[in-house]
Image (cartoon, rainbow, N blue to C red; front, top):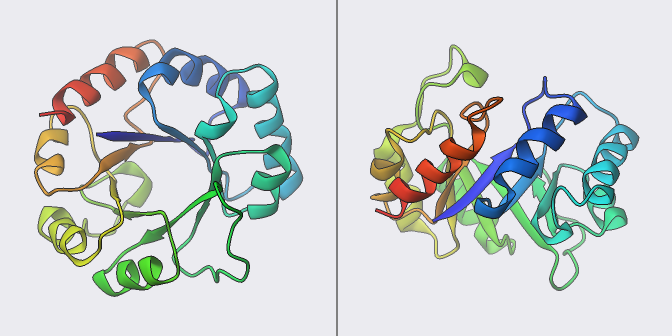
Length: 195
């Protein structure tokens, strides 16, 4: 099971350093996702994470800012569903896209995405008021494409096994990690997700 950890918009750099350093051995990719920050602010946060060796460069994905990811020497970029892919990323530069339908998943695969992230699967604080897409929709997306599908949204140790039974390649978590228990949560996700 592939495990992605996405930064929470309210996390400070100190929080990222603390939490991410605890869970790094069990996490496949870390997403630097700050919609409200400028490119320069995202670059500065990424630089701190890399300079302190909290995360190896190949595990760091920058959301939305392709040039920042390239400048930092990160493993790749994660794009929103609406983003156009004008320049195919360099060889070895991983890119993925958020999708919310089978049609978007097929389009992302056709455009060359290395993976897609589909959600939100369950209710989650970050998507209040929006109906979750659920396991059936996740299964449909998994069956429609050949590239890895990462499930996101409301996933935790109690439901990860059901998520993995859909055939998806892995899960992404945002709210599941908190101070003090992050290492245990990630280990439990990996254990239960492996089936």
